[in-house]
Image 1: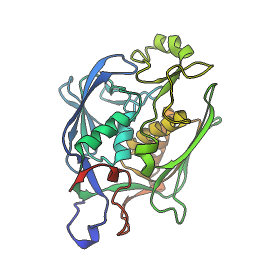
Image 2 (image 1 turned 60 degrees about the vertical axis):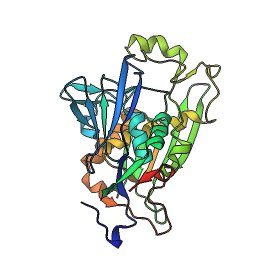
Image 3 (image 1 turned 120 degrees about the vertical axis):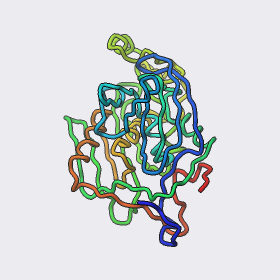
Length: 314
């Protein structure tokens, strides 16, 4: 549905894309391959589409129906063409309010960069965002949808009366020492400062096993927090609870595969990529659990709480 210049739409949330193309070069966390990635502005209504430039520009839309392997990263596959480790980029796009973009990548994995979403956020801040003439659609949660696996759990719920139309997350983790139990509660409005800088992490003792499985070939202290049972090898941490914040970062990226930002509450306990994407697929199957809604603000409120920190041009 096209937006209009009428007064009724002046305070509507509009879709956004980036002002100009952005390039990144780095190594894939799991493949160890060098890769060049380029984000290109896309037309309103396009969504997020990955394009393998090394395979005749083959396109894979970032949607739940294209989810592939999800054990240690969230990957997309269409007609046997793979894009690995998409979650940090998808998280940054959702967190900063970028609705439409083409992601050109010349290898099978998105570069890990510093292990967080911060490099993407800084790039968006550098070039700015452009509003488009189309009202943004949200996935408004109407009833609870849950996924359970033993002591692991994830669920999404409608916002309570008085909570507005936000996207809030409560996440709890329980890892071996030195992490232990951590919990984080926050809202997408605080994404840039509170979530985006949190880096991925792993245990040094797991490295031989993971490498034998063909994973983490590109891992280093430059792109991940490395842990032993005694502590952090490459500190300092960016947050005292950086580990659970990174799980929230991953969750936002994985739930981006629903195709739209969520209006609702997400609660997760000891979940991971597989459960995050299982929730997306369960949501997509249950059409009674959600409806498409347009976001509007009061006259005194900013049009997009996350994106207002970024320069924007209408």
